[in-house]
Image (tube, helix red, strand yellow):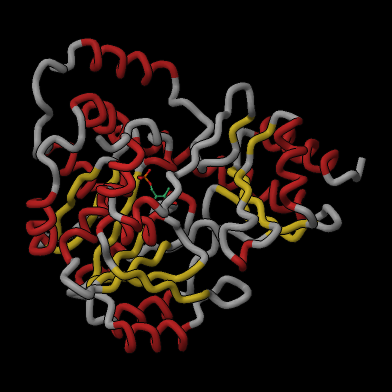
Length: 361
Ligand SMILES: *Cc1c(COP(=O)(O)O)cnc(C)c1O
């Protein structure tokens, strides 16, 4: 008889054995500025309405596999023209996986830029797809000639560009993104997870390109706990992806709560506006600290570089503030930390803790 460990090692694919699971640190008692969550709950009246909706929700039944009212609200928010549809996912992470599964013919390549959202590469590995990562320029803008060259060489069936990019926070140059879409033989997905905090979007370009889809999530807008993301684009694309979607991927409660929250989208957008203002304040405060380099951001987080990020990360944590340590994740992120914009009080606490941590006080 083999031991469990022997069986596991024998049966699980080697590339899965080699992965380390996505690490979510314990945040008990800490100010949580590591995961780009919206720090605000919605107003109490709206929470009361949600409580009533949840109380009478038919949780004994399977969820609606095609929640028309919710999809209509999303279509309306985006101003999608006829012929364009939305596909709902259990967070946008699930949609990345659906896309990869749909186009993963033998030898197919998924291409993205680096550093960017780590799930693109991870999901390529999950589904057994080849991954090509093109380094960004030193200032985190696109290296357009290298990217176009990689597209020519690799002929990727799927390209992901996060717009704004995570973890760098910047929007790539629109015209360069356009050139990438036009040069790509495969599908290009613009990942607009941070749309609420950004000054530009590719939603209005959907009709111009047959190989373009836009992906969004409500996670960064105050619904991270619901797990709801969507793809927008031609119904012809989404029809195929629908076949791969597990029938009940979005539960009864997330559907109902999201619908209610989207009826009050302006409340969420006001919170996003507040977060953008506080991002500016935080950016200025960080810029004024000697030894801290802070990158400008169109998202709800800021990327910073400072000496000995590992030590500062631990010192911040010891002082009750959890940020994301990006040191070691990618060579271009050496000594980088990423901090989510929190409430003004949380941001102040972070700045104090940072000053103490780098020994300026
Ligand atoms: C957070 C994030 C996502 C994933 O969001 P979920 O909908 O919560 O799965 C996707 N893309 C980018 C760039 C992100 O930062």
